[in-house]
Image (cartoon, rainbow, N blue to C red; front, side):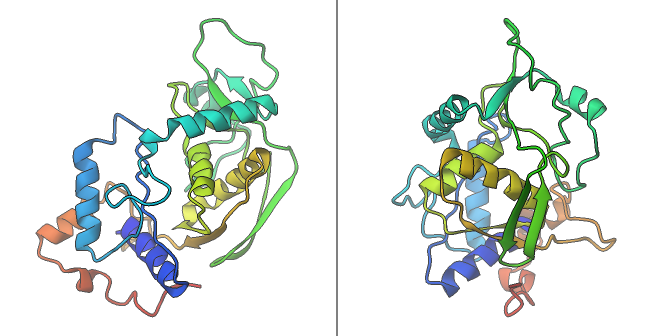
Length: 262
């Protein structure tokens, strides 16, 4: 439901500005992104009453809209970052980072603070590594969110060096989204408030790659009865389960219309 409401907000904002709503299938994690899941996603969103003008099922001027088909663009961006000395090889495991982190990361942010262990480490032969972006320590990254207003995060304090290319040779979310948003000429990114820190990271990537950043609109998260964020594990509240129980789209988004934040 949380993802559906965010996509609904994107649809309403696109309509209000006579723009196009774009659905991008972020299927980089091959183990978790199966074809049947994609088909179910598209079916459920259409049943919910959402309509996009560009996407993997309808095409568009900036196809393909499956990230798994856009690796060549991510690879080119990685090479540009390497040439500019913006990235370095990191041999640390997630467990290493969590145990050595200088500060806890935000509850809604999935990437722990990186302590910089590999910043000056020489190459290690025959070892797996990720490519990590070197943040400018102490620099304040600021932006105006179209819903939440002025935002300010300090590199090296609120977030550390972050992975842009995983050690299993897959581009990370931060890099892929920046490259695709620029290539698809996205003017406004609509997503959940748990990704505010990701926006700060991505603004540094836009600058390093010489790309123009879009505007951002972060939606408040949906909470359960106890005030906790709705998670994917809340199976009873996913669209398919609600649909099978006989719920209708109008019933589910009742009260949303006319209350779009921002």
